[in-house]
Amino acid sequence: MVFKFQINELVRYLHSKNEKLMMCGEICNRIEFGDTRLIDYAVAIASKLDAHVAATGNTVVELKKRGIATRKMWAAEVIYYLQHERWKEGLNMAARPDVVILLGYNIDILRAIVNSLGAVGIETVVLDNIEVEEATYSLPRLSIPEWKNALDKLCSISGVSHAKRP
Image (cartoon, rainbow, N blue to C red; front, side):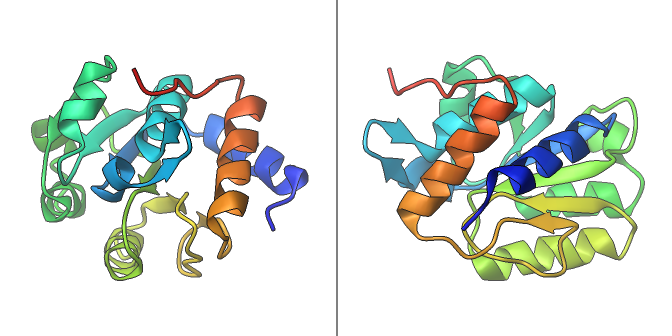
């Protein structure tokens, strides 16, 4: 279970970073928590943190509908741009991200991204309900209700609320 103090620590950590990049994977479109979808949490978190967003899978449509400036990319493209110091060109960022926030990926993709970015010194935060020990910060393995609760706490402590689906 994710306890409030751990979420507080995560919020402080994220707010301490200057350049944040959020990668939203296809699973953001598939997970529903009643009347709220995982993409709704992605929007709320990216907005509050003023994070740049790389839309992988088919998340670009939903993100743009909600007013999030994003570009459709393959996850491998994001990794390539970050590994080869080309974030300005490929990601339209003014500086290299201090941290990459991941949401909406399966365990194999998460591990590949975390390990690839870790190899070039980029910190990672995994907000999926899968623990990735190699990440700088990762939520533990959570049931769907526990995961929703953790995301709700993250949004409420961050001062954001998730927007329910239109």
